[in-house]
Image (cartoon, rainbow, N blue to C red; front, top):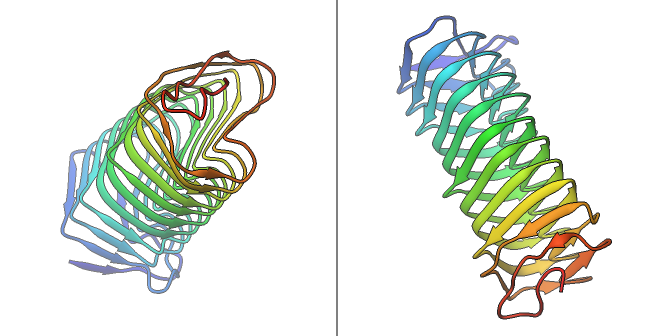
Length: 274
């Protein structure tokens, strides 16, 4: 089915629970629509699959507040004027998987406040004006795995403030204009088998009051500033088995103060911090 939406209207609004959407193309007619698919607040048991959303004037697929048991998979979102997939506050048990998201006007995937039990897996994000994936505030339980992020205008993956149990695994991040991964303030994050494939600033930037474990990750390509930048001593670092075979314009490991712990690089050039 083809839905063409213009005039500032949503392509498709989900007004009830227990809804299954499949095999739909939503065309925003040159970004003259509002959102492509909007799941209104307070819905449960919604599935969106095998759907294409293109050229919409706001968010490609949007979850409003207080939704639960949402599955968004096997979809393609291209040329959304804002986020490819976006969720507002207090959503729970949300799966975003097997997605292709191309050319987003803000973030490829954006999550706002107090969402819990999110799963993001097998997602390919190519070109976002801001972040590839933005994990905003106060999440609990966010696995991100088996994904590819390329061409973010800021950080490829941002973990912002107050997030717990963020686990990122088997994911490659390349060609970010700023950092590949930025972990900002008061987060608990585990990185496993990450490929940092160059960045316009740092490969991994860690801000303040974070607990970060990094294992078996590879830094390759060229980092215009540092491969790793630990910005304050008020962080707890752990993990080993990491590899550096890239090039840093400034330092392999820039550290302000002396944080607790270290990221291990058995093959050198040193641990971080040494």
